[in-house]
Length: 291
Image 1: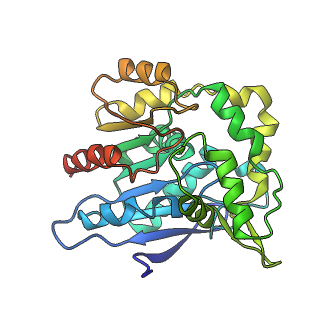
Image 2: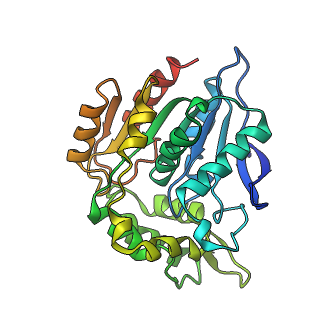
Image 3: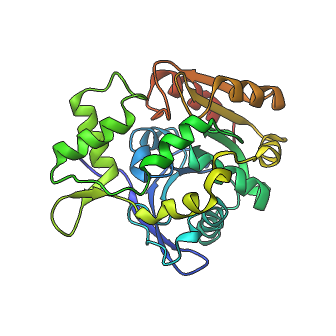
């Protein structure tokens, strides 16, 4: 398959070398770029389906590998694996790329980083898409993710890697085929030094979660959400069966931000891959209304 993006690196405030996939915009009027930020244990490959489509619609897309994931450096201090640090890393990317404003697309943890950015430098966010995440999360979903994040896995081959991702994600994607799970594994694993697939993230990303204990299960980001949704377009995407963004939390978000756009992706849990027809049918008209 032909690579549809350029490799881009930038330097974090503490000196780490970080990576992003840089999808060039199709020719036409210059429009604000999209910064795509993945979830806790994932990487830029999660946007491999939607990013080229956004680029074809006329927007440059920078899909990042958050520190400790993918092709970005692992942090020597695991306590830097926190949304505020990640947000400062993103600001460094914007500054080094000469981007003063952008549309932010954040899946799960990526949405938390987007909310942190609203608190740190609100003016950089022209619009935001929050994918299956809110200013509070359901304890059940967060506990499920915390239970496997950073845990050792035994995957001597791709079949075992596919079985691993199916074990932890089948509840969200019950319709996936064996081929889908193989593709999922190849997005989330890489070949390690011993020649076997290994998870493509630093296991120490779980250290701050464990250190926070029960407090990590009930974050209150409503002030950041209010700042994010004030005077800018926001689209909330929710998986119909999500165990992280419950119906009640989504309803509360809509009440707090009545002008926020909302779409629910049927038959999918946490988190939609954004290649679903319902997700695309909401995302592209939303982007079409942003400069």
